Length: 209
Image 1 (tube, rainbow, N blue to C red):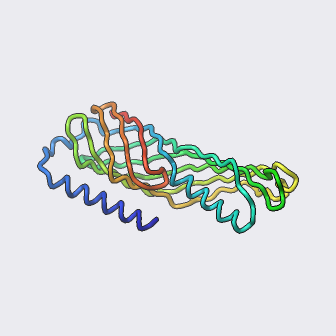
Image 2 (image 1 turned 135 degrees about the horizontal axis):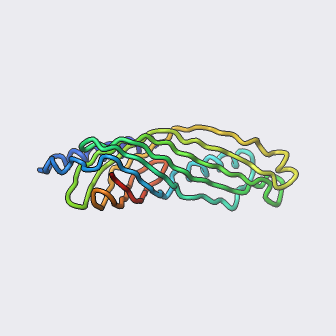
């Protein structure tokens, strides 16, 4: 994971340097509206994959079986403040996973597990191309993933083995070297591609004022 993080970071830097080498009117980078609010949804494949992988390792050790695994996409809101080509702000994200756990020796599901993920990601962006309605940029974010784990016993054995609800924190990040926004100085839509806790693909709308 660290290798992918470093590789994508280098890709973002390389992309910025290539575009900066082109002749572009600097005035096009002066934002008319500095404040921006975003509503977005991400595929969440990385985040849910980490949760399921961790559960799978635990299952292999204890001999339990997991079924009916469900996961949501990552829903988020964000804010940016523009300073020339740079934008600083943060994103908040929410996702959840659930599954049924069958204890060793039982034939039916014993426990229902749920995990709620809340992402807090301070974010920095760099706009490396802007012309008319098209804007290309890259972003990097680092923060925390707050995870609330709960269990509900479905059988007598499951109730005896159920753990109390707990809250844990993990380091979270998101790097999107390739992102595009199409729209005017007030309303637009955007798509971001990269790697991190939100996943590989993020899409949404932005409002500037």
